[in-house]
Image 1 (cartoon, rainbow, N blue to C red):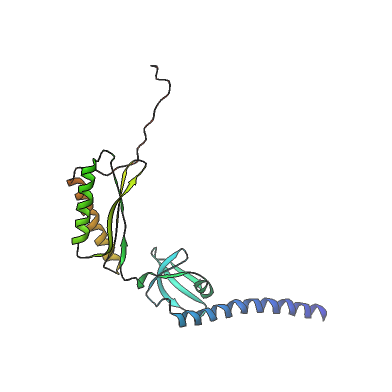
Image 2: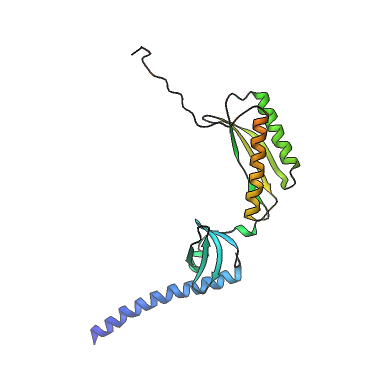
Length: 196
């Protein structure tokens, strides 16, 4: 009888532990439903996971990743994580850094900066608030020019098309002004100097 009671005690602890996790996930589902950090169809980032919310159940949330896999996340994990709702953004950041060759003369660099600023100021989908282009400094093998602006879109595919359009425009400006994009280079000096 004592052994049976001990077995029931251990079994009861196991059942209680399993029930605790289930209840934790159910309460988390209620918290998600009341806070509404996302809706079905929204693209979210939960920790390092990024994807589209496909289902919100009592125990878990299912997210389809960009690799087209479905990840099931316990609701308690969702509630305990930082949730970024990418679908809720009102615009998208465009922030490339251009690496220009070091033989770009200062006057050419100024013309490049002016042309990029003009591009940003006249493009109909560039949000003017905060848009800028700056000579950021000297990199290991390039002069660094930062372009920073937001694009007036919430759709990923449209963002990609706008970013591509701007990338081509930036490349044309650099070429037109007589500069070029740099690539990592190394100069090797050999000690000894004697002929072999």
